[in-house]
Amino acid sequence: MKKLTLSLRFLTVILFASIWSCKQGDPGPKGDTGAAGANGTNGATGATGATGATGATGATGTANVIYSAWFTTTAWTKTTVFGSDNFDFNKAAAGITSDILDKGVVLVFGKLNGYATDFGLSNNPVQLPYNVVYKSGALINTDTWSFITSVGNLKIRFISNQNLYSGGPATNYQFRYVIIPGGVAGGRLQSVKDMSYEEIKTLYNLPD
Image (cartoon, rainbow, N blue to C red; front, side, top):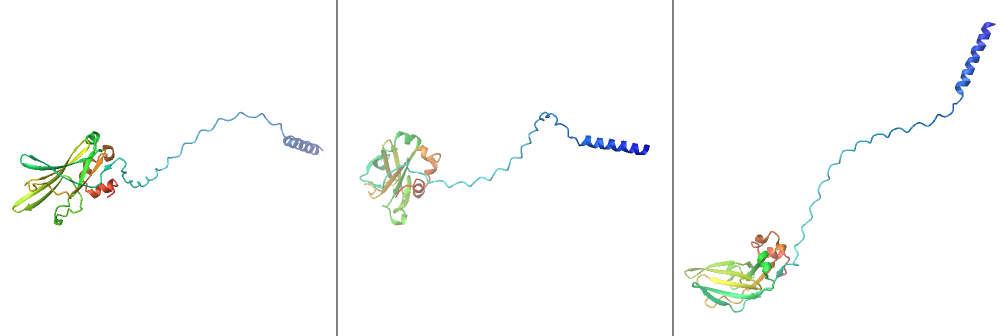
């Protein structure tokens, strides 16, 4: 009888405990907000991309370059200095200013068509100053074609070191000038003086 009573009590305790454990408690108060997490480290910088190819250089414009048409000489003016005959032809050139003389460059080209075709100068422009050396009888002669610039004027000068031209050269020679301001030529003022006519024509887009 005692065993039964104990068993019933033990069973009652178990049931009571089970009922108690199954009862849901009231929600507890909301906890405090946790501290913000630390920022993550930045990722490594990506590699620099390859440099693109350089574009082709555009042609130099002619907006600030002044050039004349081909012109022929008329009468030459003769002066004799220390026994040497100088023959000059003056050509008005308003584009030759004091600023050009100080900072720019004036180029002069000649078609020396008065010589025999063997010289290879016919319709083949050369940059002045230019020397033509040839034998005349027993003499070796040098014809020197040069120019002198002043404000508003271009002077073409011809000298034969043997004074072979008493009346001066013929008038079928042709000349052309190109005036290049300092800002257009940039650092190439000296280099353009060493260029051929075709190189200058291409560089500054000059018409024929």
